[in-house]
Image 1 (cartoon, rainbow, N blue to C red):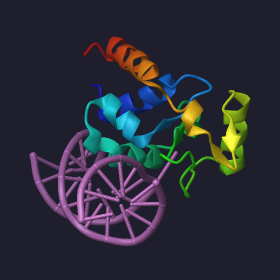
Image 2: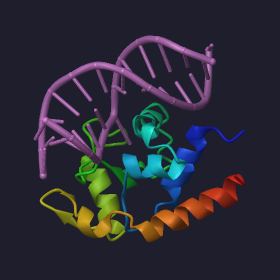
Image 3: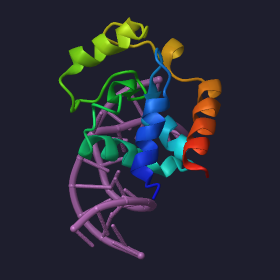
Length: 117
DNA sequence: CGAGTGACAGGAC
DNA sequence: TGTCCTGCCACTC
């Protein structure tokens, strides 16, 4: 049973190291832009931080939203910096580190092979 | 003013 | 009950 939530987590895990994704991008990956609310919803109510790199999900500005559910913004920043993501004035440099159309396609393809859609 | 964005909340199935 | 979706709405470009 490939629930949507699982796909969301899978998509998050498929975000390459050194990149971050936004809610809308994840939603677009699911094929429904209207899921953009559900993405945040799913991440929040299912804090499987151990297996889901939630720190790669930021809002469109490159900030993590207020209720970061896994330890604190410092942890996220540290993790991302370790992966090579650059920060500007405390937020992710989205112009360089948000996923590209290329990444989008790659993730989409992998998602497809994982769930055999 | 119009379009994009939400780490929600609640309703629908 | 759980999963999915959609509305509201404030805020920023």
